[in-house]
Image 1: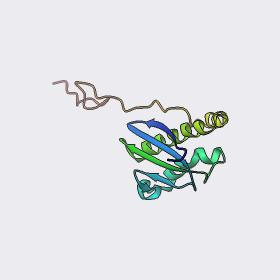
Image 2 (image 1 turned 120 degrees about the vertical axis):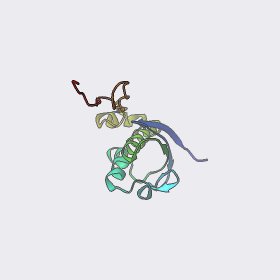
Image 3 (image 1 turned 135 degrees about the vertical axis):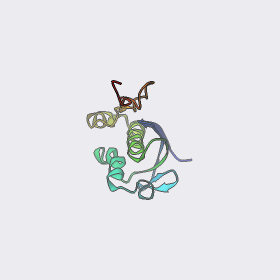
Image 4 (image 1 turned 90 degrees about the vertical axis):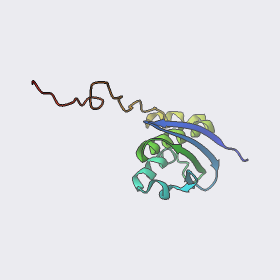
Length: 129
């Protein structure tokens, strides 16, 4: 195989394994074209952001394997994976990507359900009698 740059991105419950290969800028998620998979143009834009910021649009094909979570979380995971893979290509891109916040792993996770409660914070109905 040609030069492939592999990185992992995570967000919420989503995990994305991203592979960048020199090409025409084609994005494939779970062996499907990007708009077949995410449906929303905004999510496609999120995935493409690292390329636009580093002015590398159309230079690499993205092949992402992603599972877990919803579409927005998956798009965020792919964004982080793409940014990390771009750093493997060229270390000089790090300050640009860091300044735009693409290298920060979003720590927000779903809060766990607690015992004696209906959810993470919601309680069962209270009655005095």
